[in-house]
Amino acid sequence: MVLASRLLQVPRMESTPAALDFSAVAASVLARTSEMAERFHARLWLIHAAASEPAFVGYEPGPQSVRDQRAAELRERGLDATALRIEGPPAEKILEEASRLGVGMIVMGSHGRTGRAPSCWET
Figure 1 (tube, helix red, strand yellow):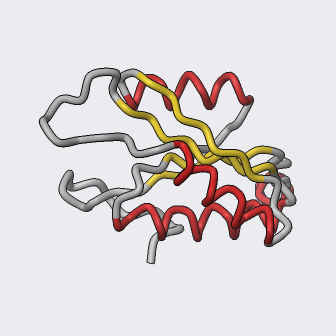
Figure 2 (cartoon, helix red, strand yellow):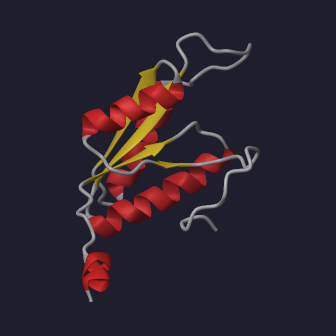
C-alpha cells in the first residue's frame, strides 16, 4: 500500500523547458512539451542553446524572431510560453538554465544516432 501511495503522488510541474534546435525533430519535441504544459498548467520555456562559436561552417542559430514566433503561437493557444536563446556549450547551458528556472524535467529530442533507448513519451 505504501508503494501505491507513492506512485500516486505526482509532483506539481510549474515550469517546463523544451530544448529546441529547430531541426525536424524539434516540431515533435515542441508538440509533446506544449501538451504537457497544457495538462499541468505549466509555464513553457523554449530554450535554444547555441555554441558561441559554431563548431562547423555554415551553422547559424537563426534570428530571435523565429523563436519569438513559436512562443507567440503557443500563447495564442493559451499557454504561458517564453523563448530563450542562450550561448555556450549546449548541454552545459541547458542544464544551467533549467536550474535557474527551477525545473525538474527537460524535454528534448534525439535524432536517433546515439543508441539511446526511447523514453516513455516517444512515439
